[in-house]
Image (cartoon, rainbow, N blue to C red; front, side, top):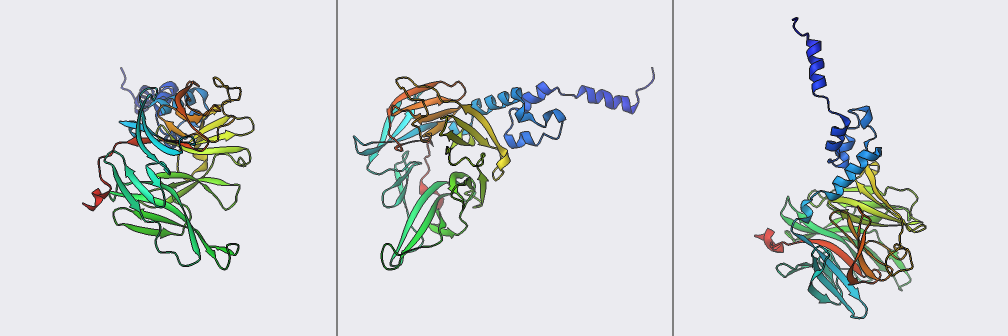
Length: 367
Protein backbone atom coordinates (compact mmCIF):
# COMPACT_ATOMS: atom_id res chain seq x y z
CA UNK A 1 0.00 0.00 0.00
CA UNK A 2 1.42 3.34 -1.06
CA UNK A 3 2.10 5.81 1.72
CA UNK A 4 -0.32 8.72 2.04
CA UNK A 5 0.77 12.01 0.60
CA UNK A 6 0.86 15.16 2.70
CA UNK A 7 -2.19 16.52 0.84
CA UNK A 8 -4.18 13.37 1.61
CA UNK A 9 -3.21 13.59 5.28
CA UNK A 10 -4.30 17.23 5.39
CA UNK A 11 -7.63 16.26 3.83
CA UNK A 12 -8.15 13.49 6.41
CA UNK A 13 -7.38 15.83 9.30
CA UNK A 14 -9.61 18.54 7.86
CA UNK A 15 -12.57 16.19 7.39
CA UNK A 16 -12.05 14.68 10.84
CA UNK A 17 -12.06 18.10 12.49
CA UNK A 18 -15.08 19.42 10.60
CA UNK A 19 -17.81 20.75 12.89
CA UNK A 20 -21.34 20.83 11.54
CA UNK A 21 -23.40 24.00 11.76
CA UNK A 22 -25.75 22.33 14.25
CA UNK A 23 -22.93 21.69 16.71
CA UNK A 24 -21.32 25.06 16.03
CA UNK A 25 -24.63 26.88 16.57
CA UNK A 26 -25.13 25.05 19.85
CA UNK A 27 -21.71 26.22 21.06
CA UNK A 28 -21.92 29.76 19.68
CA UNK A 29 -25.40 30.32 21.12
CA UNK A 30 -23.88 30.29 24.60
CA UNK A 31 -21.54 33.21 23.83
CA UNK A 32 -22.21 36.93 24.40
CA UNK A 33 -23.18 39.13 21.45
CA UNK A 34 -19.72 40.65 20.93
CA UNK A 35 -18.08 37.21 20.78
CA UNK A 36 -20.69 35.86 18.35
CA UNK A 37 -20.09 38.71 15.92
CA UNK A 38 -16.35 38.01 15.94
CA UNK A 39 -17.14 34.63 14.30
CA UNK A 40 -19.01 36.18 11.36
CA UNK A 41 -15.94 35.94 9.12
CA UNK A 42 -15.20 32.25 9.85
CA UNK A 43 -17.88 30.80 7.57
CA UNK A 44 -20.26 32.33 5.09
CA UNK A 45 -23.18 30.58 6.81
CA UNK A 46 -22.25 32.34 10.06
CA UNK A 47 -22.21 35.88 8.68
CA UNK A 48 -25.84 36.49 9.66
CA UNK A 49 -26.07 34.27 12.71
CA UNK A 50 -28.36 36.53 14.74
CA UNK A 51 -30.77 36.72 11.78
CA UNK A 52 -31.06 32.93 11.66
CA UNK A 53 -34.34 32.15 13.53
CA UNK A 54 -33.17 28.75 14.79
CA UNK A 55 -29.88 30.10 16.09
CA UNK A 56 -31.51 33.22 17.52
CA UNK A 57 -33.99 31.16 19.55
CA UNK A 58 -31.14 29.10 21.03
CA UNK A 59 -29.16 32.26 21.79
CA UNK A 60 -32.11 34.03 23.45
CA UNK A 61 -33.12 30.99 25.50
CA UNK A 62 -29.54 30.55 26.75
CA UNK A 63 -29.20 34.24 27.58
CA UNK A 64 -32.39 34.38 29.61
CA UNK A 65 -32.20 30.99 31.34
CA UNK A 66 -28.49 30.81 32.19
CA UNK A 67 -27.43 31.14 35.80
CA UNK A 68 -25.77 34.49 36.51
CA UNK A 69 -23.71 35.27 39.65
CA UNK A 70 -25.54 38.59 39.97
CA UNK A 71 -28.50 36.68 41.39
CA UNK A 72 -26.64 34.25 43.67
CA UNK A 73 -27.97 34.73 47.22
CA UNK A 74 -29.79 37.85 46.01
CA UNK A 75 -33.29 39.10 46.66
CA UNK A 76 -35.44 42.00 45.54
CA UNK A 77 -36.04 45.25 47.37
CA UNK A 78 -39.37 46.96 46.73
CA UNK A 79 -39.57 50.72 47.20
CA UNK A 80 -43.26 51.63 47.49
CA UNK A 81 -45.31 54.73 48.17
CA UNK A 82 -49.06 54.89 48.80
CA UNK A 83 -50.76 58.23 49.30
CA UNK A 84 -53.20 56.67 51.76
CA UNK A 85 -50.28 55.86 54.10
CA UNK A 86 -48.23 58.97 53.19
CA UNK A 87 -45.05 56.92 53.64
CA UNK A 88 -42.35 55.41 51.49
CA UNK A 89 -41.74 51.78 52.47
CA UNK A 90 -38.85 49.42 51.72
CA UNK A 91 -39.47 45.66 51.67
CA UNK A 92 -37.32 42.59 51.12
CA UNK A 93 -39.12 40.27 48.66
CA UNK A 94 -38.25 36.59 48.31
CA UNK A 95 -39.87 33.27 47.42
CA UNK A 96 -40.97 31.80 44.09
CA UNK A 97 -44.03 34.07 44.02
CA UNK A 98 -42.38 36.89 46.01
CA UNK A 99 -44.73 36.00 48.83
CA UNK A 100 -42.16 36.55 51.60
CA UNK A 101 -41.97 40.23 52.56
CA UNK A 102 -39.98 41.88 55.32
CA UNK A 103 -40.50 45.58 56.04
CA UNK A 104 -37.12 47.31 56.21
CA UNK A 105 -37.90 50.98 56.54
CA UNK A 106 -40.69 53.55 56.65
CA UNK A 107 -39.72 57.12 55.75
CA UNK A 108 -41.33 60.23 54.35
CA UNK A 109 -38.76 60.56 51.54
CA UNK A 110 -36.86 57.57 50.19
CA UNK A 111 -34.98 57.17 46.92
CA UNK A 112 -34.09 53.65 45.87
CA UNK A 113 -30.88 51.82 44.91
CA UNK A 114 -30.28 51.87 48.66
CA UNK A 115 -29.78 55.63 48.50
CA UNK A 116 -31.99 57.77 50.71
CA UNK A 117 -32.46 61.39 49.77
CA UNK A 118 -33.81 63.89 52.28
CA UNK A 119 -31.74 67.08 52.14
CA UNK A 120 -28.55 65.11 51.57
CA UNK A 121 -27.63 61.86 49.86
CA UNK A 122 -27.23 58.93 52.24
CA UNK A 123 -25.85 55.46 51.55
CA UNK A 124 -27.48 52.77 53.63
CA UNK A 125 -26.38 49.15 54.14
CA UNK A 126 -29.44 47.41 55.65
CA UNK A 127 -27.49 44.24 56.49
CA UNK A 128 -25.34 46.02 59.10
CA UNK A 129 -27.64 49.05 59.48
CA UNK A 130 -24.92 51.54 58.56
CA UNK A 131 -25.60 54.98 57.09
CA UNK A 132 -23.06 57.20 55.32
CA UNK A 133 -23.74 60.88 54.54
CA UNK A 134 -22.48 62.15 51.17
CA UNK A 135 -21.48 65.85 50.92
CA UNK A 136 -23.82 67.90 48.77
CA UNK A 137 -21.14 69.64 46.66
CA UNK A 138 -17.49 70.46 46.16
CA UNK A 139 -17.76 73.96 47.60
CA UNK A 140 -20.14 76.30 49.34
CA UNK A 141 -22.35 78.16 46.90
CA UNK A 142 -21.80 81.89 46.46
CA UNK A 143 -24.73 84.29 46.97
CA UNK A 144 -27.53 84.19 44.41
CA UNK A 145 -26.43 80.78 43.14
CA UNK A 146 -28.59 77.72 43.44
CA UNK A 147 -27.61 74.15 42.55
CA UNK A 148 -29.68 71.18 41.51
CA UNK A 149 -28.00 67.82 42.14
CA UNK A 150 -29.23 64.72 40.34
CA UNK A 151 -28.04 61.34 41.53
CA UNK A 152 -27.04 58.92 38.76
CA UNK A 153 -25.81 55.93 40.75
CA UNK A 154 -23.22 54.43 43.01
CA UNK A 155 -21.14 51.29 43.10
CA UNK A 156 -18.01 49.50 44.21
CA UNK A 157 -14.58 50.20 42.69
CA UNK A 158 -12.87 46.80 42.98
CA UNK A 159 -9.49 48.19 41.89
CA UNK A 160 -9.25 50.77 44.68
CA UNK A 161 -11.47 48.97 47.21
CA UNK A 162 -13.69 52.02 47.27
CA UNK A 163 -17.33 53.04 46.93
CA UNK A 164 -18.19 55.89 44.56
CA UNK A 165 -21.23 58.08 44.03
CA UNK A 166 -21.96 59.83 40.72
CA UNK A 167 -23.99 63.03 40.74
CA UNK A 168 -24.79 65.69 38.14
CA UNK A 169 -24.82 69.35 39.20
CA UNK A 170 -26.74 72.17 37.53
CA UNK A 171 -25.82 75.73 38.62
CA UNK A 172 -28.27 78.63 38.30
CA UNK A 173 -27.40 82.25 39.12
CA UNK A 174 -30.06 84.82 40.05
CA UNK A 175 -28.77 88.29 39.18
CA UNK A 176 -31.49 90.59 40.46
CA UNK A 177 -34.82 88.82 40.53
CA UNK A 178 -35.86 85.16 40.25
CA UNK A 179 -36.80 85.92 36.64
CA UNK A 180 -33.32 87.24 35.81
CA UNK A 181 -31.60 83.88 35.60
CA UNK A 182 -28.22 82.88 34.17
CA UNK A 183 -27.70 79.12 33.84
CA UNK A 184 -24.08 78.01 34.02
CA UNK A 185 -22.56 74.93 32.40
CA UNK A 186 -23.46 71.75 34.33
CA UNK A 187 -20.76 69.41 35.58
CA UNK A 188 -20.30 66.01 37.18
CA UNK A 189 -19.07 65.08 40.64
CA UNK A 190 -17.64 61.71 41.62
CA UNK A 191 -17.49 61.21 45.36
CA UNK A 192 -15.00 58.68 46.78
CA UNK A 193 -15.78 57.21 50.20
CA UNK A 194 -12.15 56.22 50.61
CA UNK A 195 -10.59 59.65 50.06
CA UNK A 196 -13.72 61.60 51.06
CA UNK A 197 -13.13 63.84 48.05
CA UNK A 198 -15.44 65.09 45.32
CA UNK A 199 -13.84 65.41 41.89
CA UNK A 200 -15.43 67.81 39.40
CA UNK A 201 -15.64 66.59 35.81
CA UNK A 202 -16.84 69.01 33.13
CA UNK A 203 -17.17 66.26 30.53
CA UNK A 204 -20.93 65.88 30.65
CA UNK A 205 -21.23 62.10 30.20
CA UNK A 206 -19.59 59.16 31.96
CA UNK A 207 -19.42 55.46 31.12
CA UNK A 208 -19.13 52.06 32.68
CA UNK A 209 -20.64 50.02 35.44
CA UNK A 210 -23.47 52.46 36.10
CA UNK A 211 -25.87 52.98 33.20
CA UNK A 212 -28.53 55.61 32.66
CA UNK A 213 -30.46 57.47 29.96
CA UNK A 214 -29.15 60.91 29.03
CA UNK A 215 -30.50 63.60 26.76
CA UNK A 216 -28.13 64.73 24.02
CA UNK A 217 -27.74 68.27 22.75
CA UNK A 218 -30.75 67.68 20.57
CA UNK A 219 -33.79 67.53 22.85
CA UNK A 220 -35.25 64.73 20.76
CA UNK A 221 -32.20 62.46 21.01
CA UNK A 222 -31.37 60.21 23.95
CA UNK A 223 -28.39 57.95 24.60
CA UNK A 224 -27.32 55.27 27.01
CA UNK A 225 -24.50 56.58 29.21
CA UNK A 226 -22.27 54.04 30.97
CA UNK A 227 -19.65 54.82 33.61
CA UNK A 228 -16.67 52.68 34.66
CA UNK A 229 -16.16 53.29 38.37
CA UNK A 230 -12.58 51.98 38.33
CA UNK A 231 -11.19 53.75 35.27
CA UNK A 232 -13.54 56.73 35.44
CA UNK A 233 -14.04 56.71 31.68
CA UNK A 234 -17.29 56.89 29.75
CA UNK A 235 -19.03 55.63 26.63
CA UNK A 236 -22.16 56.99 24.98
CA UNK A 237 -24.32 54.54 23.04
CA UNK A 238 -27.24 55.80 20.90
CA UNK A 239 -30.48 53.96 21.49
CA UNK A 240 -31.29 51.30 18.86
CA UNK A 241 -34.10 53.14 17.05
CA UNK A 242 -33.79 56.46 15.25
CA UNK A 243 -36.61 59.00 15.47
CA UNK A 244 -38.44 57.00 18.12
CA UNK A 245 -38.78 59.65 20.78
CA UNK A 246 -42.16 61.10 19.79
CA UNK A 247 -43.84 57.72 19.93
CA UNK A 248 -41.71 55.66 22.33
CA UNK A 249 -41.07 55.49 26.05
CA UNK A 250 -37.94 53.80 27.32
CA UNK A 251 -36.35 52.32 30.41
CA UNK A 252 -32.84 50.98 31.10
CA UNK A 253 -32.70 47.71 33.07
CA UNK A 254 -30.32 44.83 33.79
CA UNK A 255 -31.81 41.68 32.27
CA UNK A 256 -30.17 38.50 33.55
CA UNK A 257 -26.75 40.12 33.59
CA UNK A 258 -27.07 42.11 30.34
CA UNK A 259 -27.67 45.84 29.91
CA UNK A 260 -31.11 46.16 28.33
CA UNK A 261 -33.37 48.92 27.10
CA UNK A 262 -37.13 48.42 27.07
CA UNK A 263 -38.86 50.55 24.42
CA UNK A 264 -42.63 51.03 24.55
CA UNK A 265 -44.53 52.14 21.44
CA UNK A 266 -47.19 54.52 22.75
CA UNK A 267 -49.22 54.18 19.53
CA UNK A 268 -49.95 50.46 19.52
CA UNK A 269 -48.87 49.79 23.18
CA UNK A 270 -46.41 47.07 22.15
CA UNK A 271 -42.90 47.02 23.54
CA UNK A 272 -39.46 45.76 22.55
CA UNK A 273 -36.57 44.50 24.65
CA UNK A 274 -33.02 44.92 23.32
CA UNK A 275 -29.65 44.12 24.91
CA UNK A 276 -26.33 45.86 24.30
CA UNK A 277 -23.42 43.80 23.00
CA UNK A 278 -20.65 46.41 23.21
CA UNK A 279 -20.48 49.77 24.95
CA UNK A 280 -20.42 52.70 22.55
CA UNK A 281 -21.42 50.64 19.51
CA UNK A 282 -24.97 51.33 18.37
CA UNK A 283 -24.90 48.41 15.91
CA UNK A 284 -24.34 45.96 18.78
CA UNK A 285 -27.92 46.31 20.06
CA UNK A 286 -29.81 43.03 19.60
CA UNK A 287 -33.58 42.96 19.88
CA UNK A 288 -34.59 39.95 21.98
CA UNK A 289 -38.35 40.30 22.30
CA UNK A 290 -41.28 41.97 20.54
CA UNK A 291 -44.29 41.88 22.86
CA UNK A 292 -47.78 42.84 21.67
CA UNK A 293 -50.32 44.32 24.11
CA UNK A 294 -52.68 41.85 25.71
CA UNK A 295 -55.48 42.02 28.27
CA UNK A 296 -54.91 41.39 31.94
CA UNK A 297 -57.34 39.83 34.41
CA UNK A 298 -60.04 42.17 35.84
CA UNK A 299 -59.14 44.95 33.38
CA UNK A 300 -60.91 46.24 30.27
CA UNK A 301 -57.76 48.07 29.09
CA UNK A 302 -54.77 46.64 27.21
CA UNK A 303 -52.14 45.54 29.69
CA UNK A 304 -49.63 48.17 28.60
CA UNK A 305 -52.04 51.06 28.18
CA UNK A 306 -51.30 52.71 31.53
CA UNK A 307 -47.73 51.60 32.12
CA UNK A 308 -45.17 54.43 31.89
CA UNK A 309 -42.09 52.26 32.47
CA UNK A 310 -41.09 48.93 33.99
CA UNK A 311 -40.44 49.11 37.72
CA UNK A 312 -37.61 46.55 37.66
CA UNK A 313 -36.21 43.33 36.22
CA UNK A 314 -35.24 39.99 37.71
CA UNK A 315 -33.55 36.80 36.56
CA UNK A 316 -34.78 34.45 33.82
CA UNK A 317 -36.53 37.17 31.82
CA UNK A 318 -38.91 38.45 34.48
CA UNK A 319 -39.93 42.11 34.27
CA UNK A 320 -42.13 43.98 36.75
CA UNK A 321 -44.87 46.37 35.64
CA UNK A 322 -47.69 48.36 37.17
CA UNK A 323 -51.00 47.14 35.77
CA UNK A 324 -53.98 49.39 34.94
CA UNK A 325 -55.45 48.17 38.24
CA UNK A 326 -52.46 49.63 40.12
CA UNK A 327 -51.21 46.18 41.02
CA UNK A 328 -47.59 45.10 40.67
CA UNK A 329 -47.29 42.24 38.16
CA UNK A 330 -44.46 40.03 36.96
CA UNK A 331 -44.20 39.29 33.24
CA UNK A 332 -42.18 36.25 32.17
CA UNK A 333 -40.79 37.21 28.75
CA UNK A 334 -40.04 33.61 27.81
CA UNK A 335 -43.59 32.32 28.36
CA UNK A 336 -45.69 35.50 28.16
CA UNK A 337 -47.30 34.62 31.50
CA UNK A 338 -48.30 37.49 33.82
CA UNK A 339 -48.83 37.07 37.54
CA UNK A 340 -49.91 39.75 39.96
CA UNK A 341 -47.89 39.50 43.17
CA UNK A 342 -50.35 41.13 45.55
CA UNK A 343 -48.73 44.55 45.93
CA UNK A 344 -50.61 47.83 45.40
CA UNK A 345 -48.60 50.55 43.64
CA UNK A 346 -49.17 54.02 42.25
CA UNK A 347 -47.93 55.84 39.18
CA UNK A 348 -44.21 56.72 39.39
CA UNK A 349 -44.23 55.55 43.03
CA UNK A 350 -42.67 52.11 42.83
CA UNK A 351 -39.25 50.68 42.06
CA UNK A 352 -37.61 47.26 42.46
CA UNK A 353 -33.87 46.62 42.67
CA UNK A 354 -31.68 43.54 43.07
CA UNK A 355 -30.01 43.39 46.49
CA UNK A 356 -27.12 41.21 47.65
CA UNK A 357 -26.11 41.06 51.29
CA UNK A 358 -22.90 42.88 52.13
CA UNK A 359 -21.29 42.60 55.55
CA UNK A 360 -18.53 45.10 54.76
CA UNK A 361 -18.70 48.55 56.27
CA UNK A 362 -18.52 51.61 54.02
CA UNK A 363 -15.38 52.47 55.98
CA UNK A 364 -13.64 49.15 55.24
CA UNK A 365 -11.37 50.93 52.75
CA UNK A 366 -10.14 53.21 55.53
CA UNK A 367 -8.88 50.18 57.46
